[in-house]
Image 1 (tube, helix red, strand yellow):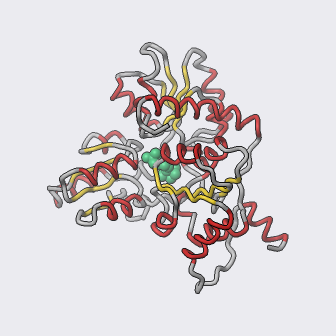
Image 2 (cartoon, rainbow, N blue to C red):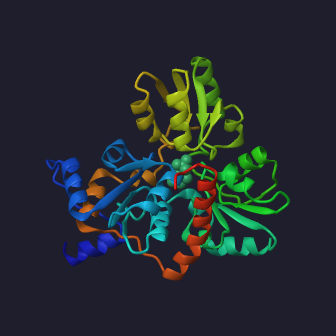
Image 3 (cartoon, helix red, strand yellow):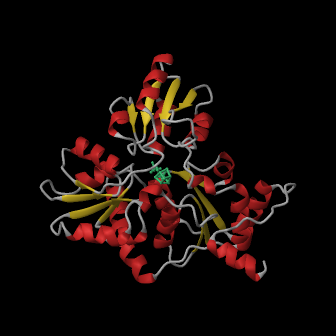
Amino acid sequence: MNNRDVVLAEKGFLDFEVDPALDLFAEIEKLKKEKNAVILAHYYQEPDIQDVADYIGDSLGLAQQASKTDADIIVFAGVHFMAETAKILNPSKKVLLPDLKAGCSLADSAPGHLFKAFREKYPDHIVVSYINCSAEVKALSDIICTSSNAEKVIESIPAGQPIIFAPDKNLGAYINKKTGRNMVLWNGACMVHEIFSLEKITKLKIRHPKAKLIAHPECEDAVLAVADYIGSTTQLLKYTSQDSAHEYIVATETGILHQMQQDSPGKTFIPAPPNNNCACNDCPHMKLNTLEKLYLCMKYEQPELLMDETLREAARKPIDRMLEISRAAGLIGG
Ligand code: 13P
Ligand code: SF4
């Protein structure tokens, strides 16, 4: 790489030409072995990336894998807050993200300085933050949760203890309903999960009367109210492989359909329709990562996720707390 390329790579603008004749799957496998690298991928990544990953999972599974890997390099095929979490858990390892610009609308909805001011208004409240937030917000939180363990995390807090839940108001409202708490909610949401059209879902259900609607708890209350099953990406996947129905309308990002189809080849999965004709149920942040960028980032070991050590230490405590609660609840192994 010349100097200009290094600068571009560090900024996350990896748009080199990759020889289209190159077998990227074979090259990536070779780089994994040469560099003792592990690829962790979220279910919302494109199918090719999922197929080349060593581990595919939801946010909780990915955080747990990141906490126990013995690889020297963690290549995070996901978005920025996920790679940040991996770095927080592995300060001595190199953490790479194929495109540093792969952000998250939900994490962006809670800028650290505004969240700090919000938290100061509720000095007697415990702060539980969804893992989809920046390291700054994590450092201002008492416990982190994911959609897999949010209910257990909230139940681990004594009844009567007031709680702030951030940044997802939809997940927060859903957990309030399930646990009977009255948590103060930060007003954030995911652009993908807020786009589903209840009207179009209702029509789709009429056209497919045997199809079950399954939804991620980041969806709005109106969609969750008509869902047959609600869960994190891993929980949705498990449900579809064990359930007896043959058809599902899936209200979450479309990337998950790849594993659903692989696990249950005989079943039909219909992406829930967005409220206009865009492909807005594809997360534009997740989809910034491509197989080419994954290959380039492994080859050049750029862009790397770096973090201030004081911030990292402060952000680690609430993640460790989450992992302890999840272990105690049997949600993850030791
Ligand atoms: P989970 O994979 O934890 O269900 O989270 C979904 C999500 O939106 C990740 O960005
Ligand atoms: Fe963030 Fe939503 Fe994309 Fe997940 S799907 S990364 S919550 S914008």
